[in-house]
Amino acid sequence: MDACYGHYDELVEAGSAYLKGKISRGVFEETANRILTFIRMGWKEFKSISLPPELNSKLKKEIIKAEKGFALFEQGVEKARKIADQEKPQEELLWQGLGLAKWGCDLLNEFIRNNDF
Image (cartoon, rainbow, N blue to C red; front, side, top):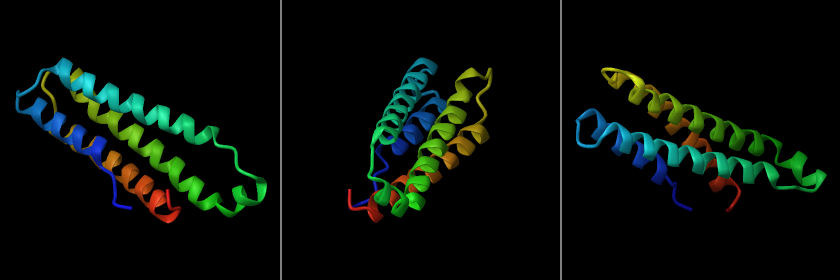
């Protein structure tokens, strides 16, 4: 399966457009909030999956990887979103957030690739 970066790419585009003045603060925040909602819903669904004990222990490392991916992606989006709260948005803050989000997205893609989803 190919890696999926749709929400990450959307955040990159929205953040870049906001910094360049091509979209409003509201549109950027709306985009970031929608992505956060998607991540949180996915994480909640993931945590609700009930595996048999023998499978759960076999997949422990992979499950931890996916949980870390969700957490990093969420933290990254939250950090990037903070540029909307600043008088003069700091590009560095956006890139720090995007770095965390990318790392999380990479871990989630690795989990999917390793587990044939």
